Image (cartoon, rainbow, N blue to C red; front, side, top):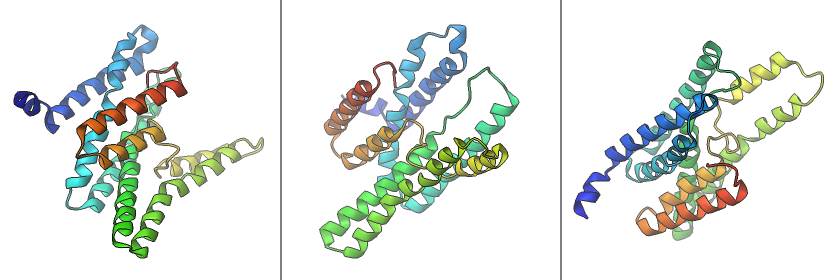
Length: 222
């Protein structure tokens, strides 16, 4: 048992997730060439692993603001990088939209909100309760411009150049409706954090969310 615990440390989990992520990307980019489905099925483990590690990181970091800032910078880097690569290398209708860092960033925002709300309730501090609620609303409010833009895009005479420019700017703002993996991954990350001291509870959470995700869309391996 001790050997298993030593083997399943954070560093090895990161290496495992990176390897599985590579397999997933191979399937994503070359599915039309006959890449087997099991490549992306293995890749479905990547997000839970990184969210599990992120939950621990948010707990142990000494500077959450700096941690969130780094995640935001990497989110911008991925967004810009995807746009550049997508314009330079064309692969039919396949486009790069992967940006897990935005999911980790939004998850971190909700973790901060959770801590403020729980501390406010424990200490009966209205100030921290208000702050926690305000932080909770940030990812939701950042989604409003995206919804508005989607509506404008449906207008027949909308200027496509203006829409594209605004969309490019908004793509740099992480929002709850645009994160990779969807809102369910944010919930998973938050629950990993809440139950970080109870591994069995984390396993149950992962199992329940996996079942829910399957029931919502049985045709996907997400």
